[in-house]
Length: 619
Image 1: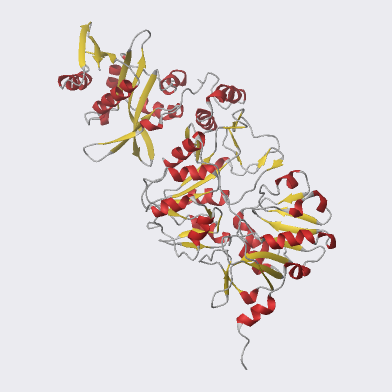
Image 2: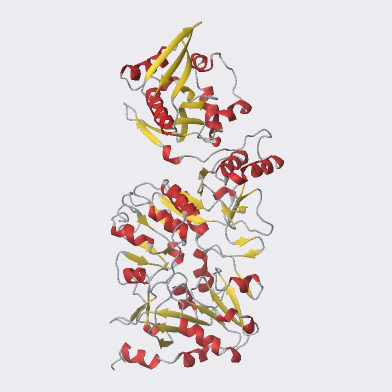
């Protein structure tokens, strides 16, 4: 007996949208496909037949285009349950005409397959079948595959303009109950060009990305800004829940190669994409991309197998203890969990991974701070204090993991908008988070002054401007100095360096004052081993200069490097020269100053009075 070819079985399943939707009954739970794969024709027809329905539950994550079933006129006909809130359903959720289910994206497929959220009818969009009768889920595999496999009845809009994506992204045409053919463009999504704030954030985040890292970024102008500053990186990989147009340039430039990935080397792993037609054409039948359901792409145990996993996610606000809210504005639900927690936790477990929360320092045109003393009333904690590592704004990077509440508050205030730093500091004092005499972080951290020095024995010393959060390391630095070194630096053998004194060394404005610290990695943590600084003198073009190198790191060229680097910085800021008081017995310091002078890099004048040289150098 000869079986009927799939092509003939396919033809028998083809119906109009109106005919297909007769399968939807009153009280049904109806799933709608995600993102740019939303079945637009079926959605429009569903709204037209609203009068014959009642209490129909509509389920989906983010979708593009209109969502007519959330209109007030359909209140008794449809009730939407948002597993992630997009702009097209936000008003309905906030006004109580739709529901919101907070859930990690990685958990949604099991929600369907275990029937904890049952689906009577799934409305999806697929490609036409290939020669084997396989349809691709196209640009959205995410939760769509699980919904289609769990639903009692599947209606698919078959669109030849849907890209055929590869990976775990196929369904047999025989597994679809009804087919509705519709040749139509799929929705596109683009964002405004990055502004100055988002570009600074992108640059700060990109500074944390090492060669060979595997990236996950979300959607929006900040992720696009990050991609702009990755063009000099090498062998980046991608394992993400979604991908957008910004990745294409990095692929074509040879930056994204996926060559160093431990899992799926040579492949971009994603669960959906949203962007312009160029992106859709680029992923079409492209073996460089593999699309998988999000219980795979977002599984922390899977993600963390990639070394140097960098996860970048957004936030609406963060409080001074490190609690992150990213799904609501107070009581008003705004978006959802998505894959944020999945990737943040996975990056934390990855060898060399970096979990990053990136957000502008302000909102509402700069009138409110996103870094707040306490989360807004009603705001939910999506990322806990214990899950937060890097926080990035346009004003810099704060690393919070393992820090005390006092250190966290100070770190976050230092990357808040300068307009809000003083008020945040006062609130932190009221809450007893910080010292009552704590100075307000000043200035904008000059990340461009970060550099490095390789010593003769191969040790790499990382040099950067000092930060208010360096107080703990400066405490350790001081107490590791010998009495001789302390005496040469401070002209007395200081026995203590309390907070009230130390904070003046770590809190500077980076204009009138500058301090560069040298750091090395020791026993798994960074330590300060050297400090060079200057401070402008009143009514003068000179700055007072001093530097200190820990005893066991002396005579290795660090002091000379610091001197030259401080001179370079000072000259760029219009400073005419340095002055310093040096003990006659401090021969190493005198030698450091005299050697470049003999090379005529600058002029040097010195006078000796009562065992102390007063040295002036002119650039």
